Image (cartoon, rainbow, N blue to C red; front, side, top):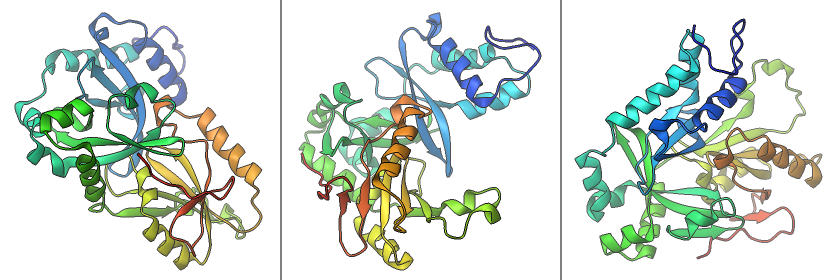
Length: 312
């Protein structure tokens, strides 16, 4: 089996080490990928959170997504990391131009408007991007608008809506943003009990606070489900408890039951450790913890009780 530079002959790399070696090789300046930028993000695919590799040509919003999990499976069966990366290179060389049908969807407002969705991102880390795209700030986060696309060539992907595209559509940016918000109501909010993911459920103490994952029932960035405050309030009322809300990544939020035993310091340290150890730089969302009071219709900052507001 052919091995990459940092692999040992005697053992197979762990998934984490595999990602590190793969990423280093991708960033080494391979000739066939010099005209592309490489981004990474956690992506919800068929209900599973996967490590996505987004390969984007400069000045092109359309980009295919590859997954470390798929490449690791091939690697575990004997394929070298170099051969895995050659698959990316070959794909990009063959599929340089987006299909005509996809281009028509993007350029035509009537075709694109029902494909609009919103995504929450970290504002500071995306400061350059926010200069040119539609957005609303929400604390240290920002909401952007994307066109959610599916194709045989690219799989599930997204095109971020910038100001120039709005001009091309001849549609007011506020109308575009409102349409994207309205479209999100078509998707169901999912709240999953973390106990269901535990390998040994009996090992979870009975008095442990309830922990739930909040996301959407779609192959997309689900953290924006936190804006569905009425549904969150209903869930909290059903559970007869209030919740701390931690924005752990762009794909999901974490709800932790307020059982009276959890300190603010613990929650901020917990979130900070998640952000430090984030598997991908682009998926980090926020440094703030929020509070869901079942008697209120909005989220509030845990730090000072301010209402979490979306503003232009």
